[in-house]
Length: 145
Ligand code: DQA
Image (cartoon, rainbow, N blue to C red; front, side, top):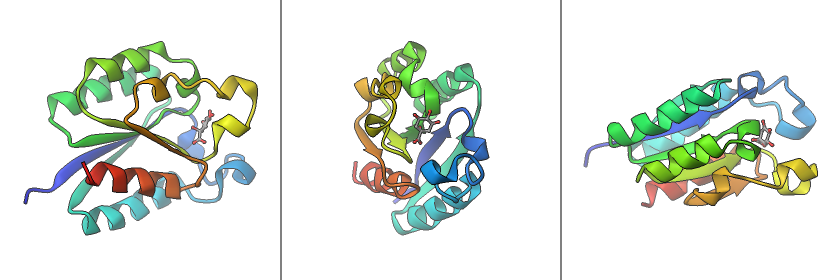
């Protein structure tokens, strides 16, 4: 069977993981998480492509690209754009590629302004509050599709 490609898209400030508020987000860097995902992807006969941008439009473009490239699924940690971006919600609704929402922390137990998730309105499923493991759980779910 051909390997299934999964895009792992990361939004603003996630490039600083490891040193950014470690008491909330842990000590793993985005590269560490990419390594864990690559190991798991091998077991699942998937391949991951990890990307990060601090710019909302890049995330929109990559969602469109996921569909154009017939990617199997997308894992999306949109960072703070989760709570603000109707553009990301529209992009998710514009494609048929399944998108899984991922968060290291559990935004629903944090400040009120994090309780709304536009991404969650169109996500296939949400994995949050498990630290780096949230990504692994989302990859497992994506591989089961
Ligand atoms: C986050 C949660 C968001 O509320 C926050 O803005 C982030 C990270 C998480 O992974 O826990 O940047 O998406």
